Image (cartoon, rainbow, N blue to C red; front, top):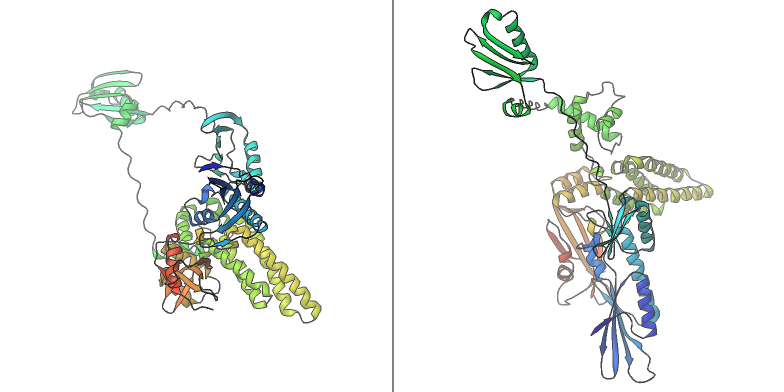
Length: 549
């Protein structure tokens, strides 16, 4: 078998050209037989580097198409399509016509462009520095401006072509790397150290002692003036002195301290006293300020300036010395939406979808979610979220008060507009909230508990909140066969908290459809074989058969 990128069959080569235009990976295997030549064309989506090794990456790698073409060796023969199969990680289907084959290639191309755009770096991720271009590890250009690299990134994102940014923040495109060249800052000449005003005092040839210059000069002046009656002999030059006393002090030498003297004989600094543990009253006082911080929906970093701005209008603002204790309380009292913002956004997006029935109760539930969303958003988006909530509240009031047909139609139109604005604001906070991805599923007990608290926070009863905090984290896979032959199984994967009598989900279910690999076993046993290796979690996974509908 020899690898080639053409077949000599017009329709096959047109499909290969179309797949290459979409940036898909195309391989052609040729087999020569006695009477005909067959070509196996495989078309697949290149896996972005950001998804390599993940569940989504394995799903992308499994989306392929296999085409079998054959051409007889007799004169005038034309090649034709013998077989076409579209594969996924859980299923496969036959494609019968060239029109359907072309549509399948286009679908793979559009999916490839979407995956590439989702995983590709943004223009603002390009390092603001000149770039060097390496081809196959060899430098070919230098000094490429960062704006030029940003243009390349923007164009490739628009076309959906695969590229990524590596750990060195270099833009990698096929065999080329655009490596940022960080200009090393000029080495600053260290400023001469200020003269240490220290002296060395040696008494009777003993261990040197480091003293402040003021103390040493006072001893020299006293020996020369008031205390000269106690001095037998003395010499002094340029701040260095030798004093011989008549009493038990003996011979004292005083000189300037060198850096070596300071490093060798300077006393070690006394350790800073450990802060006293805060008492119960002080902790409650700090928790009060932390509650005010979260009540005003401050989701930014609690810096000194931010804390001072928030507490400036309180009756008695806290002193800066108390800020560390308040920061600890802010971290301890983090609301569920701030601890797991993606799952709060998923719950809000579901509420927006449910509000499409334009019932006042559904719209009121959406308003409650929008009121909670600023805790999951950066401060720059708070104003947009509040505006969307105010619009939803106005539509809710209009729906409740509408009695005439004209008023009801106007209220429904306002409600539809409010839902659109709310959904856009939610997705601006968390773009991944459009749907639940397998790579976003929490995988540890603590992360599942935090996700469940955020997902169930709005509308949860006290009993449900207690169950989330005390229950057991697990992943549940509910498997249901189809209504026909039962060979197709739909699995709904959900991480959540199990407690006596109920299962509280942490996110919307992830739906996976696959074909049974063993008809003798139950759907749950088949699911364990097909998707079990994809669930890399640190909690128990339970497979459950659901009744066929």
